[in-house]
Image (tube, rainbow, N blue to C red; front, side):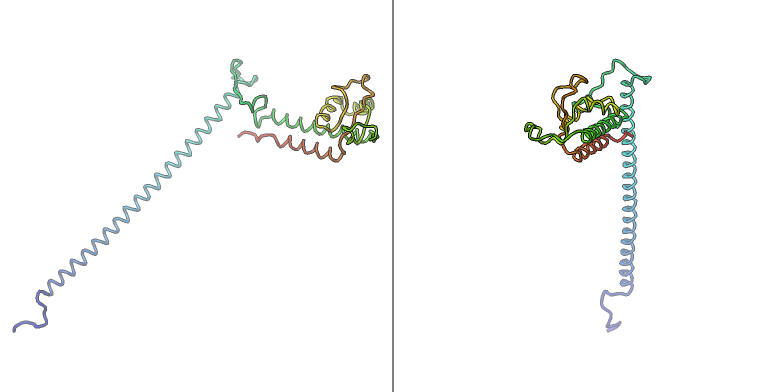
Length: 230
C-alpha cells in the first residue's frame, strides 16, 4: 500500500485547516454580533432614559404653570372683592361653601386678628373670675339651691361693677361670656348698673380650673389660624 497508513480517509490537513478557519470565523462573527447588540441595547436604554427625563421635566413645568395660574386666578378674585384695590368690582358675587360662609379667608390678616381677639377675650374672662375669687365671699351652701351647690364664691353685681370698671368698661359683655362658658352664674338676661346692684354673681368653678380652661381656650384660638398662603 502506498501513502501513510495513519492518515484517515477524508481527513486531509488542508480540509482540517479550512474547517478550523471557518469555525474561528463563525466565533468572531458571533462576538461582533453580540457587541453590536450590546451597543444597540445601550443606545436604546440611553434613549429611553432621555425621553423619561424630558417627560419628567415637561410634567414639572406643566405643574408649575398650573400652580401659577391657580394662584393668579385666586389673586384676581380677591382683588375683585377688595374695596381698596384698583380692580374692585361691586357687581362681583363671590361663592362660598357652607363651611366658608361668614369666615375670613384662611391665612389672612383678618383671620389672625380674629384669633387674637378671641385669645384676649379668654384672658379677660380669666381676669374677671380672678377678681370675683379675690373679692367675693364663700357662699353658704345650705342656703343655695341644688344647681348652685358647686359655687365657690359670690359677689354682688354693684360691688363687682365698682371694682372692675377701674380695669375695663366691658364688664357686662365679659360677664355674659363667662356665664355662657358656665364659669359664673347670675339671674337675668343682662345686668344694669343701679337697677341690678344687689344681684348676686356666683363663681361656679375653682379658680385653678378656670385658669386652665381659659388658657387652653386662648391657646386653641391662636392655633386655629391657618398658615399664610404662599
